[in-house]
Length: 321
Image (cartoon, rainbow, N blue to C red; front, side, top):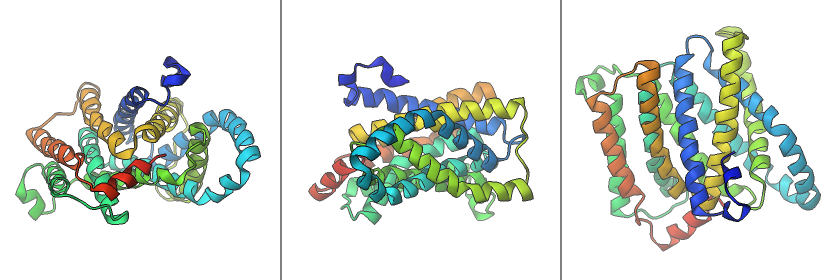
């Protein structure tokens, strides 16, 4: 893992967070490439379900040791936070499932670029749900971020909007971003001192249990997962790189520097996504991608500035602890 390269004393520093969050962006971008590449072979809900099952199996031996120690010391606290694990697990697994569904209905480059709107959505949800006061700069950032997404989903063609000739996957990806933003903002529901492996394991178990009925519906009414060499290799790769390493890196980075600073690293996903999608999927980068992405980045800079007033800053600092 990334943190094995760091001395134990460095594992709560911003430098460590920057490395883990950069790895998160790389792993999530690889998820888009692989998900798009196999979308005609493996149904999306089944792919999501089994990659999380693989993730749970990988985490199990490490999580059991941590759970035994934590339950012995803080068993009552663990029970008190079960609702938080269920909520975060549903957001985490639900968001990744929506992302794989989106990849069956749009291009990997589109999904990677739409990821860039997550930091703006994090600010927007913090304003709506947590009542954090929003300054003009951040309000303008929200509008520019929305405009950037609109440019991308309409391909910079107003006629596309008039005739509703849109890629449905773009909207599904945007819905997934709302889930990921809500996930980041609700990390404060978990105990600060809990081991990240234990926390991820419990969230994965809760989220995968919620996904089970949808997986069974897809298997019996749409398409069953073909258990062949390709499926096994893809599921294991996504389970290890994304479900385990990606989420551990994201969770650890969020706990160190908070979701608003951590969310800035999501903007590396389009960089990695485009770099991988062009050679491996043969996708093309268009001007509307670049124009919309530029608006999203400008909106991010404004939204991530010092726009919240004192009360909002205190709330933001508590998120992810």
